[in-house]
Image (cartoon, rainbow, N blue to C red):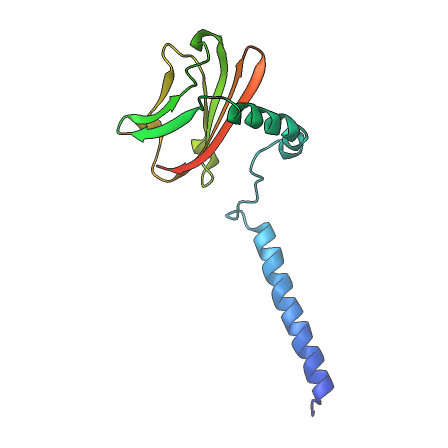
Length: 148
């Protein structure tokens, strides 16, 4: 049987489409491929995004800004000196993009103007830190990515 150009092109398209569909179905069924969203309640978190923007604006408008720095003991978070440490409430969230099992949250309880996150909790690699605190019922938010 002789195959003309039209039949050859149709067979090539069918072969290519079958090849692509095979890999799409294979990747969707594969247990090793991780298809998680960044956070579990992604859509609920999206609704509160304007509050985050307002809190970040509040943090940026402070005369003394919150700062983080790496030391051999870990990460030191220095809160603004203009705020009374006894009235600061909130959490520090550390997020590891490569492994959600390494994520953790710490409550903010200060006895000094700085908070230390110990070196033992931080593995080498990229981390995202999110510090959300309230001072006199006004929300503040600080976000930063760093490599440890």
